[in-house]
Length: 478
Ligand code: BGP
Image 1: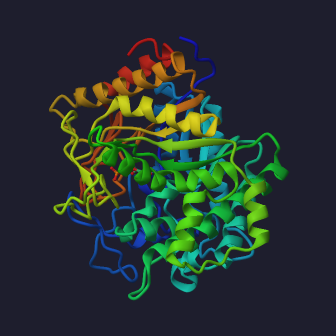
Image 2: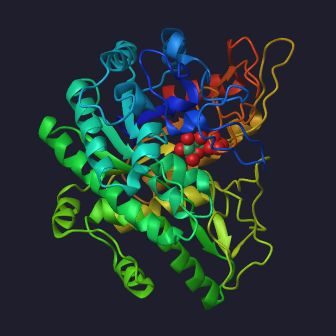
């Protein structure tokens, strides 16, 4: 094996584990007004915080008050890095203030210092689905050019404050999952946007996308001025799309559908709009506010690496599948998606496809020739806390082992350049899509249920010891 200085780690996002949603001067974000859903039941976006409703992210797993103990566990696990995010509303509670909230900045100083003291490098996402609610309500989120400036101010504030503590940054988490314009949750959490009746969601999407890509490029430019050693990446969700058969029509359907996956990283990496997007804008007659000055900024603010999440693959046929369920996250905006008969799925219907990770690594690397960082991968499942306080999560071990093996093959045989691997939800957190607690990813169990009840105590699962060995052996022991 040829990996050196590899960043083995765990991944989390502020709103899914911190709790303390209104502590230390924090303002509400777009996820703070989202109720819990369940498998097949969508989360609701409420107008404001309604007293009779349960908002799972408000307390989450209360890392806010337990960060020292949790970081101790991460150190025992041997993590080399922890990928997490900065809650924008801890720093700018409403988003449009001129001055940041010192208490929020101090909280992350404490967290980063604690991580570094324990030999864990913080890897930071600036915006992981938690744009300030005020920006969403008052400005329409990223449908408004002003939000670009608010984000830039937030990014600069973080870069300046943490320039000696953080090297690896990402601008927007899974920026591309809002390509699924049928799912209002993604638009809301990525960008603080709700589509109005009579609007063409695709036209709204591309305007929002432009402002976000611009905000990302401006952040990259500003970050490099503050510390030229910063590595600033994008973060995309990558679900490869396979053709259902070798029928050239299926092949072409898959190839065209992949534009959806590549649109955002194409701009982040190359600094200009891809030809297929420009043709679509023209063909559909979209009226977009994109200036020459913006295009120059996109060109200058390209990313250093590609952070991405990988959970599953999907399959399309040339013809539209009438039974397609548009609420189904797996198939998202692909009306021609079908099941893959060769692979199994998780209890939440997410196809399990480790080879798809090797395929993804190869495709992304050949297209962009930039270092890749697998910043999310994991297995959401129900875990049982036994009477003897053990949790036997063998399926999770199998999932992670198979994916890590595929990654190591991509490094050793295919020569793909990979910075690191951070297992998603290293400690159990609130599920993003469903708001549930019972969809667990962690190697550390948290005693909390879907309704927010439980002792919040932490327990090591079988996968804890297993992952500890993986890290210690630098991937030799799977
Ligand atoms: C990604 C998000 C994460 C995370 C993960 C698992 O889309 O970046 O925030 O939650 O998916 O999804 P879920 O929690 O819905 O199972």
